Image (tube, rainbow, N blue to C red; front, side, top):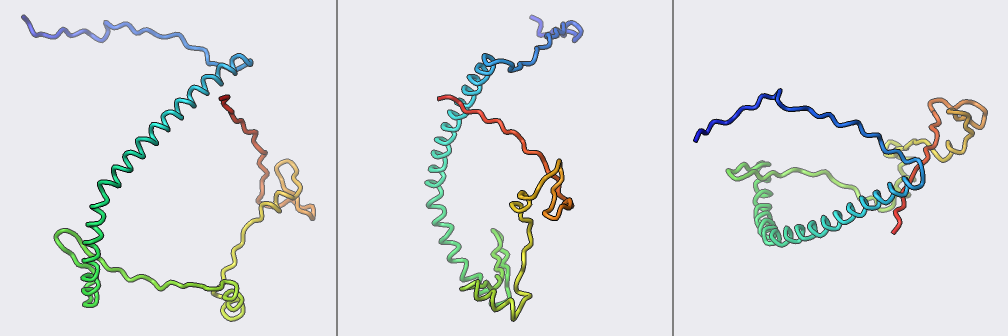
Amino acid sequence: MDNAVAVIPVDDFEIIEEPARQPFVVDDDSKADWAMRKLASVRRKQSDNKIIFDRELQRVTEWLEKVNTDLERDAEWFEANLRPYALTERLKDRKSIVLPHGTIKTISGRAKFDIEDESKFLEWAETNAPELVRIKKEIDKKALNALNQSEDKVISTQGEIVPSVKVLPAEVSVSFVIAE
């Protein structure tokens, strides 16, 4: 028996062209209802997939918590024992301790401020230390929306065209409510 494989030239295959399909167009209630029925089916499948995903996610999350609980307790024990050593070494100007299995780093934090009464602080700072007060400027879009509009321009209450503002026409949104 000969184990030779027959080689078929590429030119021996016929290329069959499929006729172009006409695009589906919703142009009457019957087609719209058919499309809504198909849309409802797709949404139900998506919902079913989400339910399966949520169940699996919950199962895997519970497994991860279970297997990592003891490990996390062990990690916390080691970190609690390494922390005092690192702080003691920092007093000797050793900010990082490089070891074969890792590095212990100590980093100085910044002092934090707890402002007990913000209004009293601001009242004092505005008169005694204005550099401690920041004033934030922003556009009042509600007030801007209340002004008159002409085509794509906004007209101020003094009748001037407001610079750097272009009115964009509102878009019509379409929503799909799937029947139960």
